[in-house]
Length: 149
Image 1: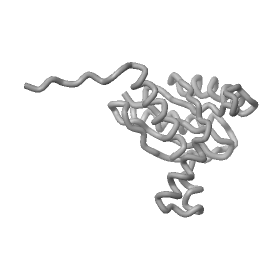
Image 2 (image 1 turned 90 degrees about the vertical axis):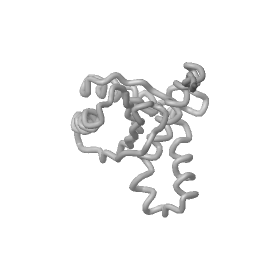
Image 3 (image 1 turned 180 degrees about the vertical axis):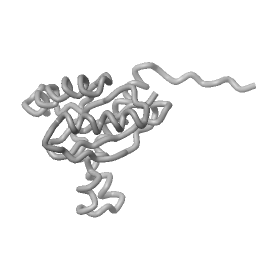
Image 4 (image 1 turned 30 degrees about the vertical axis):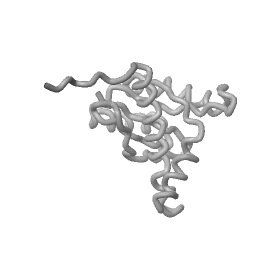
């Protein structure tokens, strides 16, 4: 099963993809917002179809205290439309500090600030997705080891 990680922004939507085993998230692309949210969702649906995705994980911009602020309310409204427009179930995951973390990772890798602007959103989406994957793995307990003879 594959999962798309999504970092919803007002101008760009970062997209990341999991591997089949759902253990690793990789930055994939950035969707530049059009004038119609439904067009953006069609683009996401196309990406999901291409990669045979069964679930979308959307970053939830919670306030520092964990409450739902205006940004989170906007994302919740968009999630309702995203789920309806794509026909793919949506889960959410806390995205606090993901953009800051993504900037630090890219800086540490020597990526210039100019180059960062083109990929920051997909890196943030991969951080969201990786955190979700790690949470799912830890919640389900340790992975079973295959016995060798």
